[in-house]
Length: 238
Image 1 (cartoon, rainbow, N blue to C red):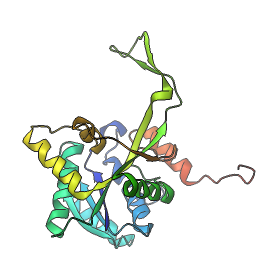
Image 2: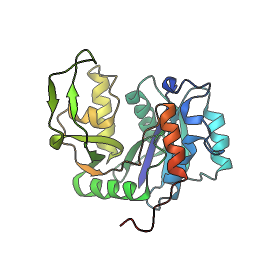
Image 3: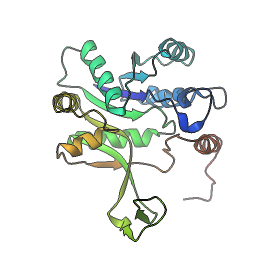
């Protein structure tokens, strides 16, 4: 069984809007619902769990009914950090299932609405092959290290860099046990599952990402998302 946890507990302060970014409507649909639809449409995803802002559960439930998200299993309150939101989603899976041995859990940012079916599929294939998979793309820019955010004398060879995205997929029991260990160790503020895996010296295996799989953080990202929604591939492009 493949289940997905969508993290959508952020306030979205960098968009400077009156609504949390995941509930901003683009072409009459909240951004988060585009993300949910991507997993609703994928034939190998069985259940959807969403960690959302406290107080927005009923609103999301209503939207899910409106847009026919039948795979939605449970909505939980997100945490103050990405790690806590993921943990709340994992705990909800524990409450719904008595046997975890056959469960693969995929974690995805709720504000990455352009995730494609191919990216989801490749992530699942990578997880089955290696036990885990993290969507990533090569870094094409020159990256500098800067302490003051103004100057630098040191760059990192881009050939050695991968920019991680989501989804991330793991065997449920592996990710659940790692979160339980993190709580024991007082680790509370990792933003992503792959960061937690790195902390415990777990190898990260990459799956195919996409430049279109943008994470909506600013109003500029919303403009890019809207443009992508209305874009079509030209016939002459191979």
